[in-house]
Length: 64
Image (cartoon, rainbow, N blue to C red; front, side, top):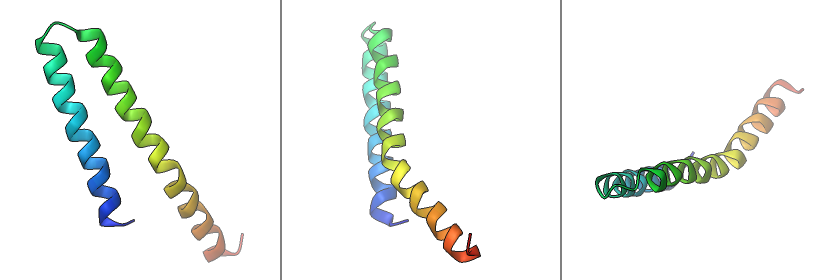
């Protein structure tokens, strides 16, 4: 995993946290929850290729 990838995930988390806080303080809890769900979905979509690469590396290491 590259450090830039981890910084992207941290950046998305920071942006989602700020948006969640702002939306919650303004009384829009529904949008705050949708923002959190969207942030988690984006991070999961970013992680899928990394997990696939990890599985292929493990398979090649053990000749499976």
